[in-house]
Structures are given as structure tokens and as C-alpha cells.
Length: 487
Image (tube, rainbow, N blue to C red):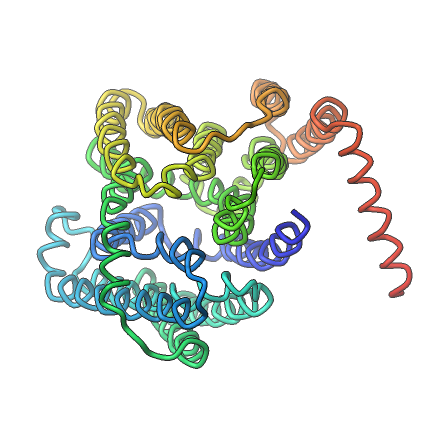
């Protein structure tokens, strides 16, 4: 857990700086891009993503598992090289097909002409470069080279932001400026990362290893497609039943909610995904998995409190266009859905360990049907609020299914008493804050901060055990001593 915590903090710093830069760009984007522009970008992105899910045949999900299963260093290198070559080849085929078929896709997604085919073409070029980045970044995670991983990510971010500011603000290219900057920055990043990959593992391709990864990964295509339906189908229903501007406002709410994934789960996942297969080989891994799940939720709770208590005020201050201000209303519901989403990702170990990926395909298919039905039922009547509620209900049902099926394969215990107390505290303070919503931004910030402090104290006293409180206090004191010595 100490190793997990160390690298999680490093990844967290990098991801946090990425998210901070994104939020600092909000005043620019919301002044130079309209809600309709946001909606177009969201629909372009989600359409390309679903095509990429099919093209990838789930190879990425198997790299950690098959790499951990190999004992010979040469076989480990061959697993990585084989996956990297296959991913780039399949992404290139999908990218070329999408580039050539941009006119058809544009007509299907934007029948009213809100977009132009060039936007799709630029998105497909970026998609190929992003897929080329995947394997080198996964190798850095396997090697626990978190500092290099974060450094490369930050360099790409700086380049992307500089290009976006130039093309959007100074050249006034709008959506085209955002897409052009993304293509250049992602292309440069992919070239550098793949040079590092080739230097580390060489170039080699094993057909037997490729077949093994495909057999494991192809059912995950349906899982990824189901996840796409869960996360993004509501945008298309909103676009059909309301407007593209409503999609843009909803997308802004998701940008805030994505902080939970980006800062709360992503840094932890980057360490945990390759490591959990090693931990599972131990004689008694259950205590580590139980402890990690509790600590993961404690990390979530801090971000959830911030999102639930202060998002409205942040949006009012940072979003220049008043049409964006309504985005805060759906944030608490989407945050709850994100927590359940990450619970499912944590609890699926048994299915992955025992090669039960076809089960995930069935869960994804049934879940997709449920969320589509909920979207059809709730969005026409309640708009964005209906979309958020449909997402929450669907994620809750999916977690129950994944948890139950995975426990049958590998039984792990969870401290549900502590988890229940934690989320009751968070839900109570956020609910009261929303009920007492003051009109003044300053009053809202003060009230939210006060509620947040009260919630943290309650969590400290009722969720953490005494030995855990002592451990946290000792770690803080040790850190302060190191700071004083360094000073």
C-alpha cells in the first residue's frame, strides 16, 4: 500500500495540474466557443470514440494481465511490442476508414449541418495518434516510472494549451482551432513516446501472443460499447429531444464531474491496475483489497464534497456565457453515478482473473438496453436532469451485477459499514447546501466551505478507525519534519 500511495501521489500531481490547466482555460473557451460549439465537439468526440472501441478489440485491457503472467523478461517485452504494433495497425485502419467516410458520418450525426466533414477528419487523425500513445504509456506504468509518465503528459499539455490559445484566441478559428492544436500536440507526443518504447522493448510480433490477447479482449468490445452507451448515449438523446446547446451545457457539467475520475480514480488506477494481478497471487490478498477500496472511497469523498458544495459558484465565476450556468444542477447526480462507475471497475477483478470477459459482454448488453430505455423515458420529460438520473440508475444496477458475478469468481471482503457512513455524511451535507442555496457567490463559497469542513471532521471521527487516525497523524508529522529539515 505504501508503494501504491507513493506512485498515486505522483500521478495525482500530474493529473491535477492537467485538470487545473483545463479549468483555467474555461474562461477562454466559454467566451470564444458557444454552447452549440461545445455540443458539436462532444458529439464528434463520442462518435470517434465508439469506432475506436470496436477497432481496438480490447487489446489494451489484456496487457497488464498477460505481462504479469510472464516470467521470462523476453516474453514480457514481446507482449508489450506485439500489443503496441497491433494497436497502431488497427487504429490506422479505423482512422483511414473514418477519414474517407467523414461525409457520411457527418450527415448521420449532424443532419442539420451543425458540423463539417473536416472536423471529423481531424478527429480521426488525433484518434490514431492517441492510440499510438497508449502502449508506451502503459509500459511506463508497468515499470512504475511515474515521474517520466507525468513529465511527458505535462509537456504535451503545455504544447496543446499554447496551440489552442494561438488558434482559438489569436487566429479566431473556433472549433477548427481546438482540433488543429490537438492534432499537432498529440502527434508530437506519440512520436516521442514510441521512440522510447522501441528503445525499451524493441520491435517484435508474436502471432500466438496476439491471438491469446484477442481471445481475451474481443468480448470487451461489447463491454466498451456498453460503457459508451452508458456515458455518451444521453448526448444524442439530448440533441434529438432538446438542442445542441443543451448538449454543450450538459458536457460542461461532465467536465466538472470528470475531476472525480481524473484526480480521484485515474492516479490510483494507473498504479493499481498493473499491481492488483501481483497482489492477487498472494496467499491472503483480501485485507489489501479491502483496505485499498476504503482508501479509494476516502479520496473520492474529498473531491465529491468539493464538487457538490462549490461547483455552482465556480461555474458562475468562470463561465462567461450565462447559458452555461445551469450546468451545476446535474453535477451531484452525475458525481454519484461516477462513484458507482469506479466501484464497478474496482470490483471486476474476479472476472478478469478467471478470463470471464464474455460475462462482461452480457452485462454490457443488458445494461445498454436499460440505459437507452431510461433515456427515452426521462429525457423528453426532464431534459438534462432526466439524462443524469438515467445514468445514475443504470450505473447502480451495473455495479450490483458486476460485484455479484465477480464475487462468485474471487471472493473479496469490503468494509461496507465504513463506506455507508462515509457516503451518508457526504450526501447529507451536499443535500443541505443545495436546499439552502444562497444567491450570492461569496455566501455560497462560505457556506460550502463550512459544510465541507464539518463533513471532513465527521468522516475523521466516524469512518476512520483509531489506528488509521494515528497513522494519518504520524504521516503528517513525519512530512512536516522533512519539510523543516529541508528548509
